[in-house]
Image (tube, rainbow, N blue to C red; front, top):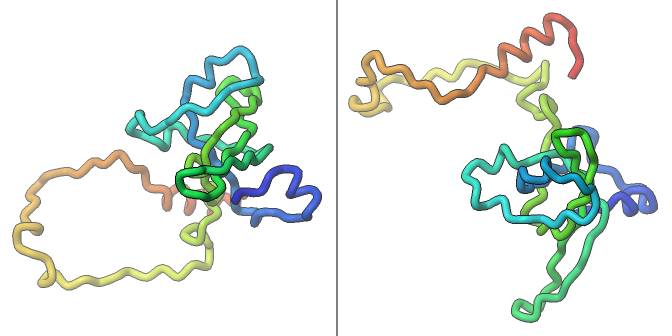
Length: 159
């Protein structure tokens, strides 16, 4: 069960400072002109969920009883900022469309004093077929975050 804004205020509960909530929503909320009454629509039809996640703040929790399972089901209303900078409340978001994640560059892998050591793996444990990659270049589109982090440490920037 996620905490709402009101519960944070009255119960004096806070998430750790490196945590934030994200909601998976349909990107069509960027085109909305009215900022009230937006209802959640499934993001699952789109293959890349990560492009549909955005920071959000849970405003309200709605409990409904599911007669089939005999359990309570929770839905949430959350404040989400669209790409135009307008904050709108999207209603009816299921719990599985909201996650608590680390803020950028706050996970343990970005600790300055984290233990880092080369892991030496003997070549003999790999099948010969795996070693014969020739001159193939593997481009998975990822960037090297560690270089950016290292550069920012050297320039003493704070995240």
